[in-house]
Image (cartoon, rainbow, N blue to C red; front, side):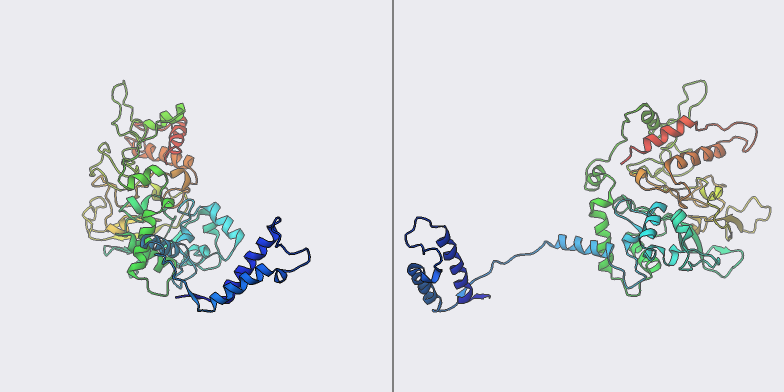
Length: 449
């Protein structure tokens, strides 16, 4: 226990009496101007009595015990520290290096600002730097790609069915991908990474710490759990209060009604309804987008998708790798043991594909799924959630769409291809998106929180 001894008590008492003596204007014992407290008889006697009392022994003070912060608060603080500051003795990166508080990701504008502020920001090391010699690894010096498109060099382990045509012994391939946002994903989405290769948040964190942050010390299971819980329970990882309430057991958020005529027209594309066959010609615009963007996060297929996939499917090829507007290096892959090998005149079970990034197929080992009309493996990627999308540019797995307007334009071209009955031929596409349609879709997307 702490003990308080005479000198401190005396000093406090002296200060108290001094103050009293200075303000007692009507007390005839107040010393004359210029007299010190030591010339006042009443004050001297009082102090003497107090000193005598204190000399009988020290005063024991029993402190009031403070229980301290709750265990939950301490765990949250430690989770925050691990996410924002812990480098795991690696290359200087933390989780927050690539997943900002504002957007959960990194845009080219973010990268440019950070480079201007600090060219040695850990964002630009390792897989954030350029691969000028084509060996699949960043050179650690040049950062043109990060500044222009904010993509990283992602090394993916090949499925046992998959080899590289030009290097059959290779078991990894490097592709260029954007950084998925952490908005809403930790609390709601069991499908992690753009290709779905990580089964849990803990394994995702372990992979990022090991591969991207190049950790040189072991990461404990407790640390991974704290990082997971911090993301699942902290407000900044939700794009709206409504979604945070939904995570806590509340109702799922509905579609905003829209305020302007454009927003209301855009809403029709995202309603869970079938096409409209009531007119002289079918109108496929009602529910056009919701066939792949349904559910609370608007990230899964619904019953109206005209493909043989179960409701709630999460992967689809929307021709981003096929169009390859980024001009990323095209790689020759060979997929072995393929049941879909029926079109090349040589049914040996091998299918060659040429793609800058086959996406989900690198995980499933399945190519040629156009034969089964599922389109959920070759060049397919995770269907992105649309909640909060206005804040998470750029878009698609390769960051090829800088704006929501670019996204709408991509889908205009996508539907022109996939809905062309004699593709490509003289017959027009079954459904196209007009300029007004694209503006309406963007107007509605900007309402989604």
